[in-house]
Image (cartoon, one colour):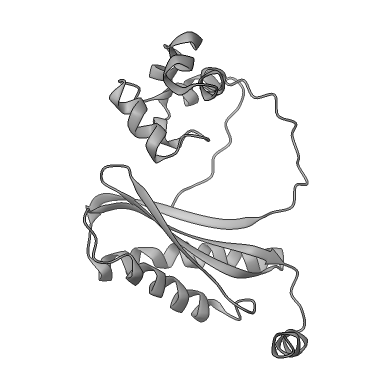
Length: 199
């Protein structure tokens, strides 16, 4: 399971340079694949490219990639921003395409997102399962419920159903994750059921 770490300003440049390109914010599967074709594997590779090169390859996003490789981000800090989702993911030491193995490796992610939702006193209506493949492509499967998830067992049932929808797999999987969204403060369970039945 991924661990959190504090990156100090002194550690920042080295951290960014060592970061795999697919882990940069704003680099999706298609951009990651294009960067790798251009020989950009890490933050250091990205930092070595000029802004003109990046603009030529990625258009208006090129300048953003140029700045982020140098730790430049002028967006305002919003420390009290409302949380929109709760997610967790894990990367495997060995890829797999077996449903039973993936279902087992999904469990710690479900434990984490449920624990965070419980600690934050929020409920969720939407469950998403994410798979990243050996070629760095990724897919997600999501399901929105008419009422908020009642318990972890329901979360697991929905998540495993979403995982099953992704089969048969054409490639092996290197990462699996789960997320909760459509978050809200919990209603009284009876009241919520009444609201749902009255629709």
